[in-house]
Image (cartoon, rainbow, N blue to C red; front, side, top):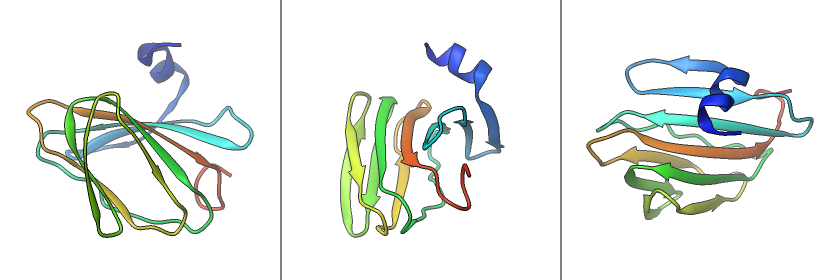
Length: 111
């Protein structure tokens, strides 16, 4: 499935001046989420003890902060975030920073 097909099947769960977030909830135990982060914006940052998370960057450039570590990212990069670690993504490019986040469903997201 390409991104267009994904968006047709997924649910748009956030749409504001910061980003658009789409969740595909058809998997039993995993959530596949697409974020399109606008230029100069950053995600709110969060952590969740319940689940590890993998970020797969599709397009654009920026950085992800995992606890106190700053990791530059661009399309094609993958970052694994252990459960319980605060993490936040920043778009430092002129275009949209797109990325997948993949995580086990937990009580307040996906279940």
